[in-house]
Length: 142
Image (cartoon, rainbow, N blue to C red; front, side, top):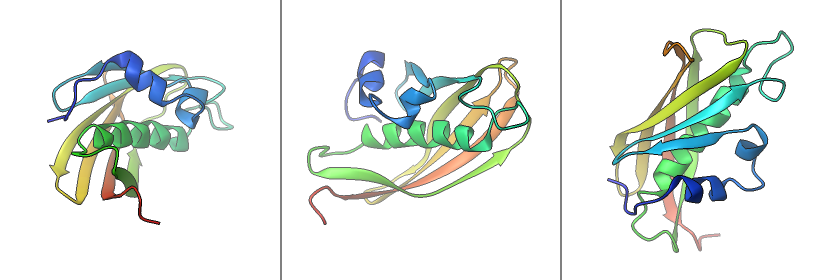
């Protein structure tokens, strides 16, 4: 489904000087129609009560969905995938370790896309489920 084969190093290079890099998000796997990344649960991603901040989960979800969308563009020089809406349901707290996000497509159309991102803890239990809606727009529009 992705229009190009990419390496983990390429995905990591896309996050240089971004919030994803600041939070320690690392890409682990790229499949035919999915990407897996992990994020540490530590001082960078905690909320004041010492558990994973819901906003950090949303950053992981949107990072995965945005990269997946980019990889589906027919003409990445002249198109951009931009987020329209994201939602997240936070199911269980995490105090430490890593969470793992996996993005998969629900709908990949010519002008809109819908992605599901499931975030799991180290015991493979659901922490957060998110959906990201993306618009595919002309990069030169302005």
